[in-house]
Length: 260
Image (cartoon, rainbow, N blue to C red; front, side, top):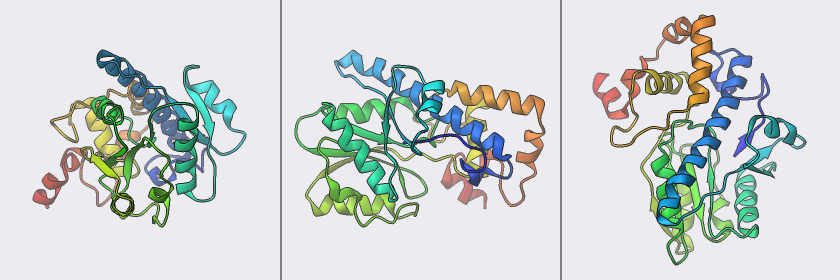
């Protein structure tokens, strides 16, 4: 699920400490790493006979040239721009199933280090017989992945999008229609300065959000960090944000609570 990068309109919750231009650049790098991660997951899935195809469900309208420029030609594009975010998600799922795929998963563009193993696990679950879903909950109460085998519209109805209730309400909707859900381990979204610090620690210090899982290396994001840390005062801006602990303190929510 992708939004074209535009300074002042993309990843604005990261401003400050980032500038609008830097936030847009991170959005682009996130998209490129998500696409690359799906390609790696496809290679992993082929070991057991699976197959993953990567798409970007994008907006706003007429932004296709941006995505063609930054993504490999192997990544398909689906315009999915509706007033309600649930309609965007449902439109993407429905389109993928109409294209002939046996399962469809919508994945966020805010988790560039999401472990490849979680994408592979979602694919394995969707490859099993029977109708069921896969949910990857985010630590903020949303979800980073939702996989389906049929276009169950109910999962996207009466959901308070962009709140901490999204994952819970989605599970409630699944229970209403009797749909079994395989729940993946939680992961985090990079949508504030604390998460940006954690992202830096994952890439430079090997601090994993979940030690049992190997994070994706996110080379595009790492390259952008390299440039900004070398050529700007980003390190000072990250360190100087008041009221936020260093990334090592938020590597695990329970560790953060203990420290406080």
